Length: 503
Image (cartoon, rainbow, N blue to C red; front, side):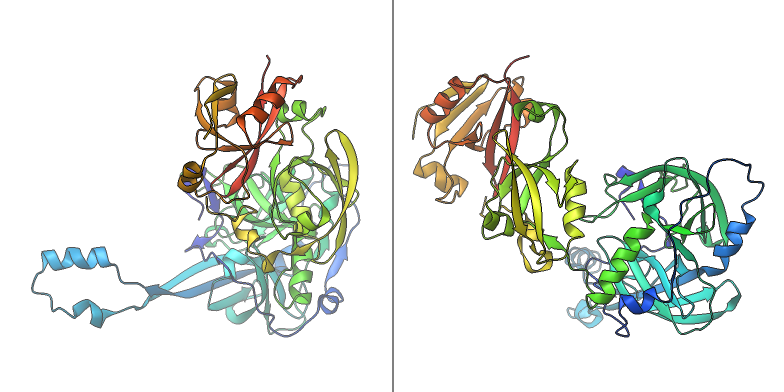
């Protein structure tokens, strides 16, 4: 479940079986090319405009026989709680000394969950969500045609970072859906959601596509989001089910809803696009149950209006490189802090989430062209991407270090000082960090609003390295623009701030 303060609730009845790191061992060695021969792909556009639709029954008749119910369960481990044990000892002083040791750690019971799945091949491959099955040690499936019979399912592959999973049951000649092309979706297209909300099997709801390409809802921690948003009613238990178009083709896998504190549907639901789900399935099957993702090795930030003005850009499109990690593909290719990435593999870069998703969808070892703007000039960089799984920077970000002069007010409200050995020691600064220390920032200063804080080390001003207060003052005094770019270092990480100097 998502925290209630964000009101983002996974659409799953019972305990949420969220997997922190399950990679999905491949069950039977099948390659995606083998599965592709069995599934039905229908990439034709949606039904053209014109003509009233009196019923969506024909579309639902195609998909409902292929939407299954998934029961998942896992053993919950009981862990000892020292604080609780101490409280019991105070309340019951006669408890034997070894009482809690004898209780030990062990099974604390079973957690059960209920979700949905969609059959995509006649021999029992089922597409669903990772949070439905990814951490389960027992999975049962029932079919609409025979709800009394339970099939044991095994996980073929699962990817927590996109919430996609593929499972398999031992059955033949099963009804299965046709899979549509989610790239053809338009806002306003009619869609139907089919699943088992709140345990009510074979429930269908209708709505429209409210938005596409939603990557800013933060449903999957450290994940890769590119959701379809819909107002078709999605509730707990719909997870892993079917979102289909008016022709009955699968175009999404319902995953989560935005809700109020009741947890009920308020018309904001999210689904994984079918193209993205198939892409993950292919990479799971051909990657030995693990999704291989490209790795660049930079810390990025989106542009705001001030940052765009400082860089001489007319829009906020593009992504700014705030830091380049050592011994990373980005460093090897010559990428530098302050570079503005405006193109990736021949495609415009709009924001950080989009670029992160595109890089993750690129195989490690691929040589990709980055179009960058450096000090106002466009150039191309060829970067050979690394493997995200093999690099510790994937978790910690590019910053990997532990986080004597005279005071000077270099810009309004900001007092800086040269670094001395005592300051370096107290801040645990690596010898490679050069710059000036921010000693104070007035609360009402523009720099404070931009994010500058005492304790930061300014390492660049206007994309030029600084090592002393004198250098900093010289750069600022010669600056003729309205917004000043300042690179800062704090607690092992660099960032770039845009500080407006004039109204």
